[in-house]
Length: 542
Image 1 (cartoon, helix red, strand yellow):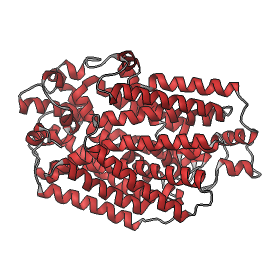
Image 2: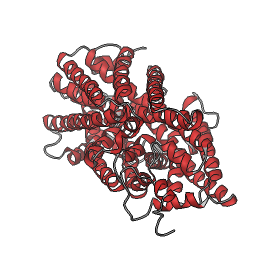
Image 3: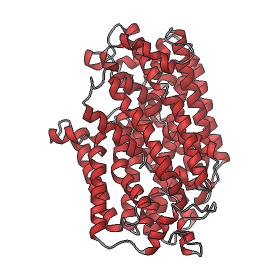
Image 4: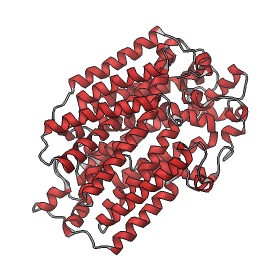
């Protein structure tokens, strides 16, 4: 694959001893942690034994969430698209408030292993389980391609090799420790990865801001003084996109956050609903630390690009390319003439972010295949050993597919992630929300809604992203792939509710399980709503 010219010149690609040692030690520590916490049963493989505390789970949520798209792509999107990039910060952050209020504790009380597990048991439908498992695999695949690309870019910068061998090496290490340790080792690693990425990112923002005279103690606010020097593209509302696209992107990211399987499964790794709520609060705080600083790093990077390169940073004026935007965090540190080891530390943080998110995605993909498809739909008598083996084989298979696709991805890192959010927001979020909050949602309604949502997302993605020219410009304008949830999610809600109203209501046992999710009575660590309903402790309001 051709190496982009500016990456080679401006990013100073080449072997760097100290950054290489930092990255090597970091990757080795992930493998060691994975070995120490290796698992052999399904409880440890999929839900970490349900024994993770709220702060540790909050750190895992933060690392799981802040992928290469956040660490590298978010600042890159703001740098390239200005005000439009703000839609990503608003969307990704707001979604967690909906999770905290409407889904975290309720999902934990329902008490399953995976997101497709919830869909299959709540709607009493193997077909709904299969559709949810397929959607989970699709999300993991699309989302992970961006992460693999991010790992390759950083590896290229540190080790000086072509991006393809770097993607292969980094993905091989990631797949290796995941196949060994499952969710338990992935969670322990995510806590370590969060510390690495947040220290590296904030150190980069503060040191670049201070050494270049942009800021002193609070770069998250002081970067506003640069607005007059950055041009209208950076700060003028809707200069680079229409209000409809801005709203569509933000809405897709909000509902997509609430539908991502690798986010929701974190609530199954804690012992009760109280810990689930508090881990969400901690997760929001840990995410805030990076999201608040990302626009400042983007502003510093754009200004430094223009000063050092002598041209406008914006692509429309012949400036920064998409590949350069994807690594603006590292570029800013380099343009500021910071020591090589420090730039390497910033780069290592990006790699930690990409690996943590890939870990969460691959675990959910493996559980979707081993638990939801193999154990629940193909072999009812599957042993734990068989499920774990199939889960590990799935991690290796999807790792190989993602690696090959990342050699030449169809879009930027941030755009690929936004596509996954759009899919999750259209297909899965309505099922989670209605399944937990409207007891009359039934199997027929869920199936109709999910099929409609999948068809809409695939059509919008093919029209807007896969084809060089959209077959329907009108569809591309009003239902863009990354903003398709603005139309698609309300439409799926309507379809699901309408079909549910026209068909028989769910049985009383299912309704009582939904009511149990909102009961004020506490539940045990291993207890689920189904356990309570089938036992003697039926909900008091029934």
